[in-house]
Each structure stands twice: as C-alpha cells, then as structure tokens.
Length: 168
Image 1 (cartoon, rainbow, N blue to C red):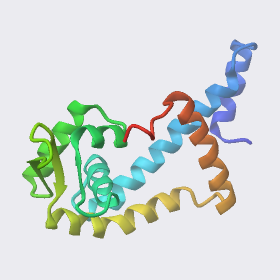
Image 2: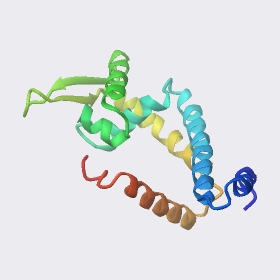
Image 3: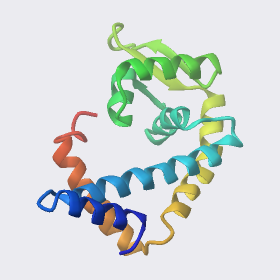
Image 4: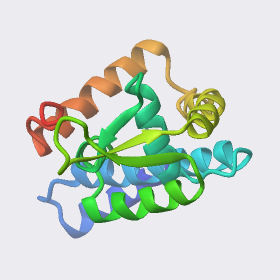
C-alpha cells in the first residue's frame, strides 16, 4: 500500500524502529477516513438544513421505529456522546420543532425524546442521501471487503467498549 500514510509510517520506523508503527498507520488512516465520512455527511445533510450532530439523533430515533423515542441516556449511549452534549443537541432539535420531550408514563422521572411529525418527515427524507454519501466514500471497497472491514472494526471497537451494544 502506498497511500500518504505509508510515508508517515516509514518516518516513524526510522525514529522508533521497535515501536508499534502498524498501529500508528491504523490510527492515522482511521482519522483521515473519518474526516472524509464527516465531510460527506455534512454535504449530504446541508440540503435538509441539518448538520451531522442533528442527524445522529434524528436518524437514531427514526431507526428505533414507532414511537421513535428514547431517553437522553439511551441516545447518548447509542451515539457514543456524553449526556451533556446530548442535552444540548436535544435543546436545539426541540427549538426547531423536530423532537419533543415528555415525561415517561411508566416512570415520571424519565424524560423521553420523541420525533415530531416534522422531525420524522425530515429524517426520512435525509436518510437516503445520507446513506448514499457514506456508500460513495466507501465505494473503493467491494461488498465482501466492506463486510471484512466492518468485522475488523467491530472487533476493535468491542475490545475498547466491551458490552457497548448491551447497554442500549
């Protein structure tokens, strides 16, 4: 492989010949690729007057199915964000009329965030272009390569966040 990170790896091999340089390559490539995915997300969502942090919440609630609601804690865990940042995001989305927060009927101490009809329509419209944009960024990979990469990244994520899928 001779991408721009290859030179960085070679430089580090000279400076730190016994260091885990392959991990530096993985880290740097993941960061650079993440930036491409983020840029594609921004561009695909701009037509809907959305930014990626808004889409994370709207898309997550849409994926959950009817009644398209969750607590702030569940939203934070599923999106990998802090509770404080989720509260800020929900404030902005609620001000735009895209979500509504109400007390849970089962436990009044729990506040649930639900997509409004406006939020559901917007999220549904934005979903196709957003998913297509991600597909374009990953288009250099075949279907089997994407499956393999997803499995490897999943293995790495599980090692860093054990049981992360179980707490949602």
